[in-house]
Length: 323
Image (cartoon, rainbow, N blue to C red; front, side):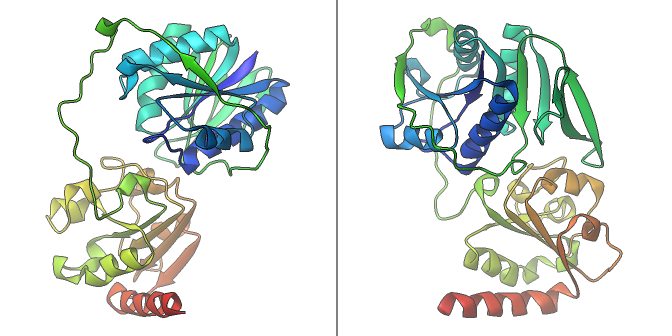
């Protein structure tokens, strides 16, 4: 029995969350006294595939097929399920991103597996198999017991630190043939965003709330994000007022993000907002209200007026970059 981990690649490249997932799989495999098989769908070069072995993958399968040049949930789930059966994988891991959320339930149904989504740590025990996840918008933890022979897990981003565990695994090409009629999705047009970082991919996010007072005051916030190489975001009231685009809205009803650094400027920290950003590795809050809920979640806080604090932050970062 092995631990199977689906490692998504973007145009043949892996991101940090893939290495985080493989590291988690490696630690889990140690608890189960088994090995890790990493599977990725879509063409990727050998050197890029070998990176998965640096984080603990004992076997690396690269599946290529002309019909799978883009994500089709049904076809991908069918292939991953077949690989899980072939490899006798008792645990199948996905990242808790949009792709993982789409594939994991389909795979669980095919394998008649119990499933836990958004898991944020290794199991507290393997017999029974018990994992922990956030519940009630991040205000509590739930301990989920999975009793089925197959177990499907999605791992919350930034919940497990990637660790170097080189195995020397040699990537293996695995060709599959599928019925073309089973691929229901089709790509009519592709438009790639250029000139700015995609919010859900950003390692650093600078976000503003009603404490910014006006849409005319966002210049320093945008400049800070640019200097840090990050993306901009906002709370729901800001997007509802039309101060910022709706695609920047983060929270329970907006985008769910997990950057390494989240800077919340003038955001009080309502439960709905924190539900979308609580997976951030570090949260820095700037608010005039010392009792604002955001400070209970933030690792670092500045009690002050954003209109005065932001320009000083921008000046400091600009000076550091000069040196």
